[in-house]
Image (cartoon, rainbow, N blue to C red):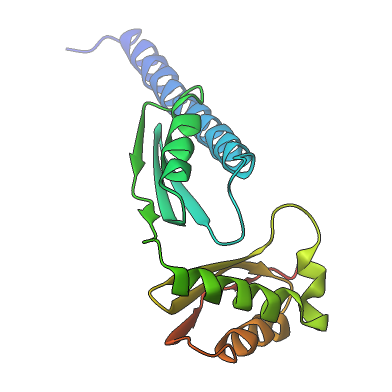
Length: 179
């Protein structure tokens, strides 16, 4: 049998428990946002992270998954090591693909770089250390990743890449961010 004075006490307990539960979610959301920001910063600061590498990540709670493709095996391990040291990260799942060494792919990378970043309407993307258009070449197949300002720039980059002789295919994964 429940007494009159027990109902308010039970109601207060339920309300406090609910507030505590939602407070934990907000804290974890803030912690996850902080981890995402720090992961992005640490990856962009890697000394050998260049235009021919693409590293992406996903943060799920305190677990960070690294994705993408790099030209150097040391860049894959460097990325994992810097992310592991971020406060709040308990585990790093490194799924970065190391591209096979290939003189043919190296030649295509340079030609693609010239074709894309040397084109007048795309020259603006060549400014700064971190190039927003990532050129990934694997066995003659090209992926364009990153962010551009307009559909016209996305299409121009795809057309320029398709015009380079010796390429088997081009996948244009560029995203448009009109800011």
